Length: 214
Ligand SMILES: N[C@@H](CCC(=O)N[C@@H](CS)C(=O)NCC(=O)O)C(=O)O
Image 1 (cartoon, rainbow, N blue to C red):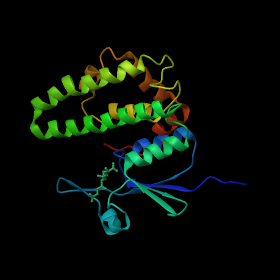
Image 2 (spheres, rainbow, N blue to C red):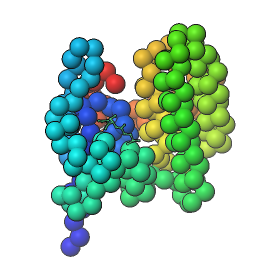
Image 3 (spheres, rainbow, N blue to C red):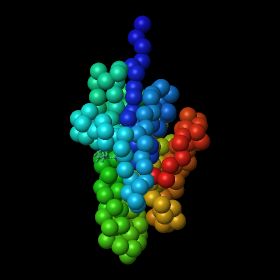
Image 4 (cartoon, rainbow, N blue to C red):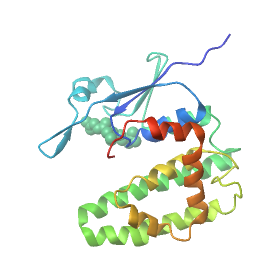
């Protein structure tokens, strides 16, 4: 009799780079240990003493890290973890082309978050431009694909890694009013957002997960 492996996802006590993987586990109905290192906000900075004390244990000295079967295998890098889980849980499209499209859109999300962080460092005008141009263009590009799939999902007529990544991108920003403006006319994306949120296992998780600011 084959039994499911034991999964332990180690990350900080925030959504950040860990939440998409947590939601993949939940959507797949797969048990995992949601191991969270405490973050302390001291003198205007987030510090993570518990993680720092153990940091050298992790191959790249960063989290998230996914341990399988008590550390028999350890996978680092959030995107690698997400793709691995999505492949295991059959949430990477129906073929290698769909998998690559999901992959590319996920990379675009990474670039978009980097552009946002850069704009924040450059001042309010740049943040405004980010929402009006960068994020807007990215959403419009995502909308093009989404409107081809009539199922309410982004690709492949069922929940995939990208649907969850998109949901988390929308909730990544503090300024939800600007996000909603960037999403104007993107009805397919909005419907994906709502479909993810209404997926029973995800809905349950959203209600019970620890509430964090990021
Ligand atoms: N590219 C990595 C980045 C991971 C990363 O930067 N993790 C941060 C937490 S959000 C970390 O471990 N920081 C600890 C440190 O730098 O000491 C990924 O996607 O997993």
